[in-house]
Amino acid sequence: MIKKLRFRFAISVILSALLILVVLIGTINIVNYRRVVSDADRELDMFSTSGMADVPELPEDAQMPDPNGQPPPDDRVIMRPMFMPETNTYSAVYDADGNRIDSFTSWNSMFANDTMEGYAQQVLSLGKERGFIGDCRYIKQTQNGSTLVVLIDCGPGLNNFRNFLKYSILFSLGCLVIISIAAVIVSGKAVKPVADSYEKQKRFITDAGHEIKTPLAIINADADVLMTELGEDNEWVTDIKTQTRRLSALTNDLIRLSKMEEGKKSLNLGKVDLAQIVAEQVNSFKSIAASDDKEFVLSCAGNVKTEGDADALRTLVSILLDNAVKYSPEGGKIDVSCRAEDRLAVLEVGNSTADFLEEDMLEKLFDRFYRADASRNSDKGGYGIGLATAKATADAHGGNISAHKKSDKQIVFAVTLPLSQ
Image (cartoon, rainbow, N blue to C red):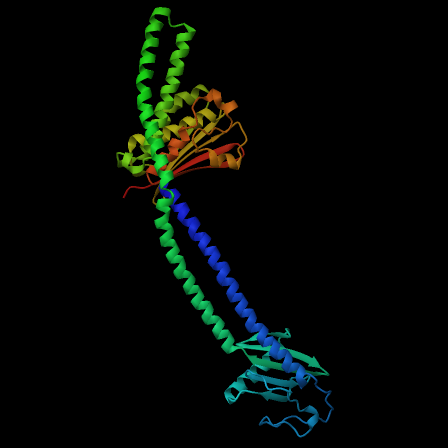
């Protein structure tokens, strides 16, 4: 239990730190990216409105540029910006057929110009008027039957953004590793008061249980003496013996639960045939079930062996079978199966119930002293410790126990234990 508490504490701290880092680093990087985009859009807007966007309508005899890219002498189609952009820019004007009419670039590289022309041709086929192509931000405007495409180099800004993103992620991972180590170290100190309190509680239950056993034995012996003198039909003496047995059973259950919660150190480990234990316990409960016209259906594969304490596992199986017999309706069927599956020994005990099963109830079944409805179940006996003991036993063996419903009135308890090597 304490290990699980430490684990949950450490995981909570790590997940909280991870959430903070994701929000913080994510926000910073989103702001950086938007700044790159907004700077590029501002220059694109200034460039496109400084004269390049005011494209005149072309006459039918307008001259096209020659193959070397030189503009025609007709100044009606020559466009030049009214300012020089701060970053590498390429712009081109195209007619309705996609032929380039004029172009302008602040790039000095012919290779870059050829690349930008290819990008501009791709932009013409895109449906968006603004966006990214490669590391270039573009804007596309259509006016008077001609289309202006402007591309601006965002490479330096995007490279800075990518570098910051990479290093911020690495920094966050480093911080997360440090926080994880610190959380594991601090978790021990954080849960120490709870661990100390839990240990004192377990010692108290064990010590008190042993101390209570002696007076209970004396009371029971005295009741036997009184019964010989007053007769076995004396209701007061009979009630004393009944309540003494109930208190003795509760004391033994609490001691057993406390022992199982100590983990593996309380177990006498050895190779155990779980299938054989299940078969033995089912035979023991058959007569009890038959008295209420209840039927056991056993399906056990042979040689399902696990490493565990035979007595503890026998008690676990007995608890599940007793629970199924108690809470299944008269004439009901109890399904018991035991098999090896994926390196696990799997035990399932299922039975129908008279009451409607709710999901939140299933989560509480393994809590100490919990019973779904104390007013209706008081006649069944028990104190709500059995399933808590079963869970502690499964945990002590490195396994798990869970409850799920097949239908609204059918419940299945499943126990998984590691198979022995």
